[in-house]
Image (cartoon, rainbow, N blue to C red; front, top):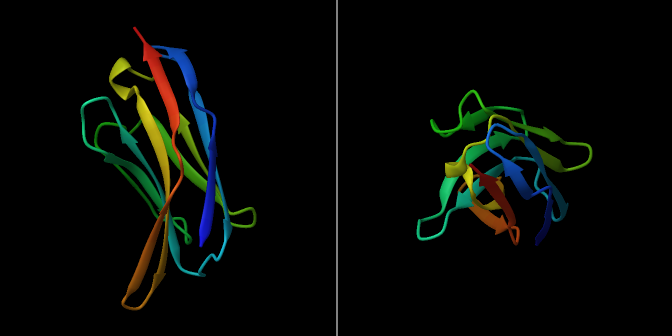
Amino acid sequence: QVQLVESGGGLVQAGGSLRLSCAASGSIFRINVMGWYRQAPGKERELVATITNGGITGYADSVKGRFTISRDNAENTMYLEMNNLKPEDTAVYYCNFRNLRPGYATDYWGKGTLVTVSS
């Protein structure tokens, strides 16, 4: 099992910034991927950004150039720096941790942290 604790959500005005954190603990495989997903009211959960244990990143088109994902492998902590926030970024943001082995993948989810961007 992997436990995830998110922090850093809140209320911010459009154009502002927030930094989310996700601390992982427990049975962490050497090969893994961490990511942020979000779910807005009435919408499906969507991928925001991912980062491998080797530091390879990926972003949704809607956040490219505004959000930056990073991680501290020594602390098993992932961050999401969100700049130039827009009202459409309002959502519950979930931390995801995926343990990987050949032919084996297991996902773990945090409880979510609410980000509200006012116009």
